[in-house]
Length: 332
Image 1 (cartoon, rainbow, N blue to C red):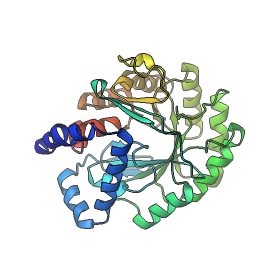
Image 2: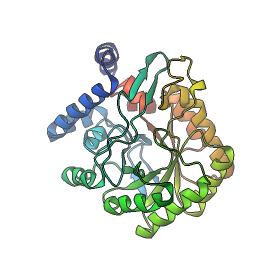
Image 3: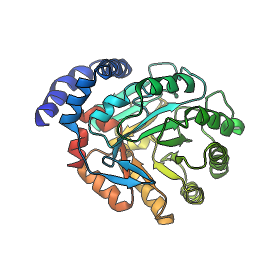
Protein backbone atom coordinates (compact mmCIF):
# COMPACT_ATOMS: atom_id res chain seq x y z
CA UNK A 1 0.00 0.00 0.00
CA UNK A 2 2.92 2.36 0.67
CA UNK A 3 3.98 2.18 -2.98
CA UNK A 4 0.43 2.92 -4.15
CA UNK A 5 0.18 5.81 -1.70
CA UNK A 6 3.47 7.26 -2.92
CA UNK A 7 2.53 6.97 -6.60
CA UNK A 8 -0.91 8.50 -6.08
CA UNK A 9 0.07 11.41 -3.84
CA UNK A 10 3.37 12.31 -5.49
CA UNK A 11 2.62 11.69 -9.16
CA UNK A 12 -1.02 11.05 -10.08
CA UNK A 13 -2.55 13.64 -7.74
CA UNK A 14 0.10 16.23 -8.54
CA UNK A 15 -0.70 15.97 -12.24
CA UNK A 16 -4.48 15.68 -11.84
CA UNK A 17 -4.75 18.74 -9.60
CA UNK A 18 -3.28 20.93 -12.36
CA UNK A 19 -6.46 20.46 -14.41
CA UNK A 20 -10.13 21.40 -14.00
CA UNK A 21 -11.66 19.29 -11.22
CA UNK A 22 -14.78 18.22 -13.12
CA UNK A 23 -12.74 17.29 -16.22
CA UNK A 24 -10.54 15.08 -14.05
CA UNK A 25 -13.59 13.52 -12.40
CA UNK A 26 -15.09 12.68 -15.80
CA UNK A 27 -11.76 11.25 -16.95
CA UNK A 28 -11.58 9.09 -13.81
CA UNK A 29 -15.10 7.77 -14.44
CA UNK A 30 -14.16 6.96 -18.05
CA UNK A 31 -11.05 5.10 -16.87
CA UNK A 32 -13.01 3.13 -14.29
CA UNK A 33 -15.65 2.27 -16.91
CA UNK A 34 -12.87 0.79 -19.05
CA UNK A 35 -11.58 -1.27 -16.10
CA UNK A 36 -15.16 -2.38 -15.44
CA UNK A 37 -15.25 -4.22 -18.74
CA UNK A 38 -12.55 -6.68 -17.63
CA UNK A 39 -13.42 -9.04 -14.79
CA UNK A 40 -9.80 -10.21 -14.41
CA UNK A 41 -8.69 -6.63 -13.68
CA UNK A 42 -11.36 -6.23 -11.01
CA UNK A 43 -10.26 -9.51 -9.42
CA UNK A 44 -6.63 -8.36 -9.34
CA UNK A 45 -7.67 -5.06 -7.74
CA UNK A 46 -9.93 -6.79 -5.22
CA UNK A 47 -7.18 -9.18 -4.17
CA UNK A 48 -4.91 -6.21 -3.47
CA UNK A 49 -7.40 -4.01 -1.62
CA UNK A 50 -9.98 -6.29 0.03
CA UNK A 51 -10.38 -5.61 3.75
CA UNK A 52 -12.76 -7.69 5.85
CA UNK A 53 -14.19 -6.29 9.06
CA UNK A 54 -17.70 -7.76 8.72
CA UNK A 55 -20.74 -6.37 10.47
CA UNK A 56 -24.51 -6.63 10.13
CA UNK A 57 -26.96 -3.73 10.20
CA UNK A 58 -30.70 -3.85 9.47
CA UNK A 59 -30.31 -7.34 8.06
CA UNK A 60 -27.58 -6.35 5.60
CA UNK A 61 -24.11 -7.88 5.72
CA UNK A 62 -21.32 -5.36 5.21
CA UNK A 63 -17.75 -6.41 4.36
CA UNK A 64 -16.53 -3.54 6.49
CA UNK A 65 -18.11 -0.32 7.84
CA UNK A 66 -16.63 2.13 5.32
CA UNK A 67 -18.48 3.09 2.15
CA UNK A 68 -18.13 5.57 -0.69
CA UNK A 69 -20.72 8.34 -0.48
CA UNK A 70 -23.09 9.41 -3.24
CA UNK A 71 -21.81 11.97 -5.71
CA UNK A 72 -18.87 10.07 -7.15
CA UNK A 73 -20.71 7.45 -9.19
CA UNK A 74 -23.73 9.58 -10.03
CA UNK A 75 -25.14 7.30 -12.74
CA UNK A 76 -24.24 3.83 -11.42
CA UNK A 77 -21.50 3.29 -13.99
CA UNK A 78 -18.48 2.13 -11.96
CA UNK A 79 -19.70 0.85 -8.59
CA UNK A 80 -18.32 -2.63 -9.34
CA UNK A 81 -14.77 -1.25 -9.61
CA UNK A 82 -15.31 0.84 -6.47
CA UNK A 83 -16.34 -2.36 -4.67
CA UNK A 84 -13.01 -3.89 -5.71
CA UNK A 85 -11.11 -1.10 -3.93
CA UNK A 86 -12.00 -2.52 -0.53
CA UNK A 87 -15.10 -0.52 0.39
CA UNK A 88 -17.68 -2.26 2.57
CA UNK A 89 -20.57 -0.72 0.65
CA UNK A 90 -21.15 1.89 -2.03
CA UNK A 91 -23.81 4.55 -2.48
CA UNK A 92 -24.61 5.70 -6.02
CA UNK A 93 -26.50 8.77 -7.23
CA UNK A 94 -28.04 11.16 -6.50
CA UNK A 95 -30.56 10.08 -9.09
CA UNK A 96 -33.79 11.89 -9.97
CA UNK A 97 -36.93 10.67 -11.72
CA UNK A 98 -36.20 12.65 -14.89
CA UNK A 99 -32.75 13.42 -16.34
CA UNK A 100 -31.33 16.84 -15.53
CA UNK A 101 -28.21 18.78 -16.46
CA UNK A 102 -27.60 20.44 -13.11
CA UNK A 103 -25.99 23.84 -12.72
CA UNK A 104 -23.79 25.48 -15.37
CA UNK A 105 -20.03 25.09 -14.98
CA UNK A 106 -17.53 25.60 -13.60
CA UNK A 107 -19.11 23.80 -10.66
CA UNK A 108 -16.38 21.84 -8.89
CA UNK A 109 -13.32 23.29 -7.13
CA UNK A 110 -10.56 21.89 -4.92
CA UNK A 111 -9.01 23.64 -1.91
CA UNK A 112 -5.84 21.54 -1.36
CA UNK A 113 -4.56 23.69 1.51
CA UNK A 114 -7.67 22.69 3.51
CA UNK A 115 -8.25 19.24 1.99
CA UNK A 116 -11.67 20.42 0.90
CA UNK A 117 -13.87 20.42 -2.16
CA UNK A 118 -16.61 22.86 -3.14
CA UNK A 119 -19.22 21.48 -5.52
CA UNK A 120 -22.16 23.18 -7.20
CA UNK A 121 -23.25 20.35 -9.49
CA UNK A 122 -26.97 20.73 -8.83
CA UNK A 123 -27.88 17.02 -9.08
CA UNK A 124 -26.86 16.38 -12.68
CA UNK A 125 -27.74 12.79 -13.66
CA UNK A 126 -29.15 10.58 -16.42
CA UNK A 127 -32.50 9.98 -14.70
CA UNK A 128 -34.04 6.87 -13.14
CA UNK A 129 -34.69 4.87 -16.33
CA UNK A 130 -31.12 5.09 -17.65
CA UNK A 131 -29.80 4.60 -14.12
CA UNK A 132 -31.77 1.35 -13.88
CA UNK A 133 -30.41 0.17 -17.23
CA UNK A 134 -26.86 0.68 -16.00
CA UNK A 135 -27.50 -1.45 -12.91
CA UNK A 136 -29.26 -4.15 -14.94
CA UNK A 137 -26.28 -4.32 -17.30
CA UNK A 138 -23.73 -4.54 -14.50
CA UNK A 139 -25.67 -6.52 -11.92
CA UNK A 140 -25.44 -6.28 -8.13
CA UNK A 141 -21.97 -5.86 -6.59
CA UNK A 142 -20.62 -8.19 -3.92
CA UNK A 143 -21.21 -5.51 -1.30
CA UNK A 144 -24.44 -3.67 -0.37
CA UNK A 145 -25.53 -1.12 -2.95
CA UNK A 146 -27.19 2.06 -1.73
CA UNK A 147 -29.13 4.33 -4.06
CA UNK A 148 -29.44 8.03 -3.27
CA UNK A 149 -32.66 9.63 -4.55
CA UNK A 150 -33.50 13.34 -4.83
CA UNK A 151 -36.42 15.26 -6.25
CA UNK A 152 -36.12 16.90 -9.66
CA UNK A 153 -35.17 20.56 -9.49
CA UNK A 154 -38.30 21.61 -11.44
CA UNK A 155 -40.59 19.75 -9.03
CA UNK A 156 -42.11 21.97 -6.32
CA UNK A 157 -41.84 20.89 -2.69
CA UNK A 158 -45.57 20.14 -2.43
CA UNK A 159 -45.15 17.37 -4.99
CA UNK A 160 -41.68 16.21 -3.96
CA UNK A 161 -43.07 13.09 -2.26
CA UNK A 162 -44.71 11.99 -5.52
CA UNK A 163 -41.61 12.71 -7.58
CA UNK A 164 -39.29 10.84 -5.19
CA UNK A 165 -41.63 7.85 -4.71
CA UNK A 166 -42.02 7.46 -8.49
CA UNK A 167 -38.23 7.38 -8.80
CA UNK A 168 -38.08 4.87 -5.94
CA UNK A 169 -40.71 2.70 -7.63
CA UNK A 170 -38.51 2.34 -10.71
CA UNK A 171 -35.37 1.50 -8.72
CA UNK A 172 -36.62 -0.26 -5.57
CA UNK A 173 -35.73 -3.78 -6.70
CA UNK A 174 -32.10 -3.03 -7.59
CA UNK A 175 -30.85 -1.38 -4.39
CA UNK A 176 -30.05 -2.94 -1.04
CA UNK A 177 -30.84 0.31 0.76
CA UNK A 178 -32.01 3.77 -0.25
CA UNK A 179 -31.02 7.24 0.87
CA UNK A 180 -33.58 10.03 0.47
CA UNK A 181 -31.63 13.24 -0.08
CA UNK A 182 -33.51 16.18 1.43
CA UNK A 183 -30.39 18.25 1.96
CA UNK A 184 -28.61 19.09 -1.31
CA UNK A 185 -27.07 22.57 -0.85
CA UNK A 186 -26.86 23.21 -4.60
CA UNK A 187 -30.55 23.44 -5.41
CA UNK A 188 -33.43 25.39 -3.88
CA UNK A 189 -33.68 24.45 -0.20
CA UNK A 190 -36.88 23.62 1.62
CA UNK A 191 -37.69 26.38 4.11
CA UNK A 192 -40.83 25.06 5.83
CA UNK A 193 -41.37 22.40 8.48
CA UNK A 194 -38.63 19.89 7.67
CA UNK A 195 -40.19 17.08 9.71
CA UNK A 196 -43.54 17.31 7.89
CA UNK A 197 -41.76 17.47 4.53
CA UNK A 198 -39.65 14.39 5.30
CA UNK A 199 -42.67 12.52 6.66
CA UNK A 200 -44.68 13.04 3.47
CA UNK A 201 -41.78 11.58 1.51
CA UNK A 202 -41.31 8.64 3.88
CA UNK A 203 -45.02 7.78 3.86
CA UNK A 204 -45.10 7.83 0.07
CA UNK A 205 -41.98 5.68 -0.26
CA UNK A 206 -43.12 3.21 2.41
CA UNK A 207 -46.40 2.74 0.51
CA UNK A 208 -44.32 1.45 -2.41
CA UNK A 209 -42.31 -1.00 -0.30
CA UNK A 210 -42.70 -1.26 3.45
CA UNK A 211 -39.63 -3.44 3.97
CA UNK A 212 -36.89 -1.58 2.09
CA UNK A 213 -34.13 -0.11 4.24
CA UNK A 214 -34.36 3.69 4.05
CA UNK A 215 -32.07 6.46 5.29
CA UNK A 216 -32.73 10.21 5.30
CA UNK A 217 -29.72 12.37 4.39
CA UNK A 218 -29.65 15.59 6.37
CA UNK A 219 -27.74 18.85 6.12
CA UNK A 220 -25.15 19.86 8.73
CA UNK A 221 -26.69 23.34 8.61
CA UNK A 222 -30.14 22.52 10.03
CA UNK A 223 -31.21 23.64 13.49
CA UNK A 224 -30.93 21.54 16.64
CA UNK A 225 -34.72 21.39 16.73
CA UNK A 226 -34.81 19.99 13.18
CA UNK A 227 -32.21 17.37 14.14
CA UNK A 228 -34.37 16.34 17.09
CA UNK A 229 -37.56 16.16 15.02
CA UNK A 230 -35.94 14.25 12.14
CA UNK A 231 -34.44 11.80 14.63
CA UNK A 232 -37.86 11.24 16.22
CA UNK A 233 -39.38 10.75 12.78
CA UNK A 234 -36.75 8.22 11.76
CA UNK A 235 -37.21 6.35 15.03
CA UNK A 236 -40.97 6.15 14.44
CA UNK A 237 -40.57 4.97 10.85
CA UNK A 238 -37.63 2.63 11.61
CA UNK A 239 -35.53 4.68 9.22
CA UNK A 240 -31.83 5.57 9.39
CA UNK A 241 -29.99 8.86 9.00
CA UNK A 242 -26.99 9.82 6.87
CA UNK A 243 -25.25 12.62 8.76
CA UNK A 244 -24.30 14.70 6.91
CA UNK A 245 -24.37 16.29 3.47
CA UNK A 246 -22.06 19.17 2.54
CA UNK A 247 -22.28 22.59 4.20
CA UNK A 248 -22.88 26.12 2.95
CA UNK A 249 -21.12 27.61 5.97
CA UNK A 250 -18.18 29.61 4.56
CA UNK A 251 -16.92 30.38 8.07
CA UNK A 252 -15.48 26.86 8.15
CA UNK A 253 -12.99 27.80 5.44
CA UNK A 254 -9.77 29.65 6.16
CA UNK A 255 -9.60 30.99 2.63
CA UNK A 256 -12.05 33.70 1.66
CA UNK A 257 -11.89 32.88 -2.05
CA UNK A 258 -15.26 31.12 -1.96
CA UNK A 259 -17.28 33.60 0.08
CA UNK A 260 -19.24 34.73 -2.98
CA UNK A 261 -19.27 31.39 -4.80
CA UNK A 262 -22.18 28.99 -4.46
CA UNK A 263 -21.71 25.35 -3.58
CA UNK A 264 -21.43 22.85 -0.75
CA UNK A 265 -18.18 22.34 1.15
CA UNK A 266 -16.95 18.82 1.84
CA UNK A 267 -13.74 17.52 3.37
CA UNK A 268 -11.79 18.36 6.52
CA UNK A 269 -13.51 21.69 7.28
CA UNK A 270 -16.77 19.75 7.73
CA UNK A 271 -15.37 17.23 10.20
CA UNK A 272 -16.35 18.79 13.54
CA UNK A 273 -19.72 19.99 12.29
CA UNK A 274 -20.63 16.51 11.06
CA UNK A 275 -19.50 14.96 14.34
CA UNK A 276 -21.59 17.48 16.29
CA UNK A 277 -24.72 16.49 14.33
CA UNK A 278 -24.02 12.81 15.05
CA UNK A 279 -23.76 13.55 18.78
CA UNK A 280 -27.04 15.49 18.73
CA UNK A 281 -28.78 12.57 17.03
CA UNK A 282 -27.46 10.21 19.70
CA UNK A 283 -28.62 12.55 22.48
CA UNK A 284 -32.14 11.90 21.21
CA UNK A 285 -31.91 8.25 20.17
CA UNK A 286 -29.50 5.36 20.61
CA UNK A 287 -31.47 3.16 18.22
CA UNK A 288 -31.68 5.06 14.91
CA UNK A 289 -29.06 3.64 12.50
CA UNK A 290 -26.56 6.34 11.51
CA UNK A 291 -24.10 6.53 8.63
CA UNK A 292 -21.58 9.23 9.56
CA UNK A 293 -20.30 11.23 6.59
CA UNK A 294 -18.26 14.41 6.34
CA UNK A 295 -14.58 15.14 6.92
CA UNK A 296 -13.37 11.61 7.68
CA UNK A 297 -9.64 11.51 6.94
CA UNK A 298 -8.05 9.27 9.57
CA UNK A 299 -8.40 6.11 11.63
CA UNK A 300 -8.93 8.40 14.63
CA UNK A 301 -11.90 10.05 12.89
CA UNK A 302 -13.49 6.62 12.48
CA UNK A 303 -12.80 5.73 16.12
CA UNK A 304 -14.30 8.97 17.46
CA UNK A 305 -17.47 8.61 15.39
CA UNK A 306 -17.86 4.98 16.32
CA UNK A 307 -17.61 5.94 19.98
CA UNK A 308 -20.19 8.68 19.32
CA UNK A 309 -22.62 6.06 18.04
CA UNK A 310 -22.24 5.73 14.26
CA UNK A 311 -22.41 2.20 12.87
CA UNK A 312 -21.29 2.93 9.31
CA UNK A 313 -19.11 5.62 7.73
CA UNK A 314 -18.88 7.21 4.30
CA UNK A 315 -16.16 9.18 2.57
CA UNK A 316 -15.84 11.14 -0.65
CA UNK A 317 -13.32 13.97 -0.38
CA UNK A 318 -10.68 11.87 1.42
CA UNK A 319 -10.94 9.36 -1.44
CA UNK A 320 -10.00 12.17 -3.85
CA UNK A 321 -7.12 13.44 -1.71
CA UNK A 322 -5.78 10.15 -0.32
CA UNK A 323 -6.31 7.82 -3.27
CA UNK A 324 -7.16 4.12 -3.68
CA UNK A 325 -5.46 3.00 -0.45
CA UNK A 326 -7.78 5.14 1.67
CA UNK A 327 -9.94 2.25 2.92
CA UNK A 328 -6.95 0.33 4.23
CA UNK A 329 -5.45 3.48 5.75
CA UNK A 330 -8.67 4.39 7.56
CA UNK A 331 -9.62 0.96 8.86
CA UNK A 332 -6.29 -0.78 9.52
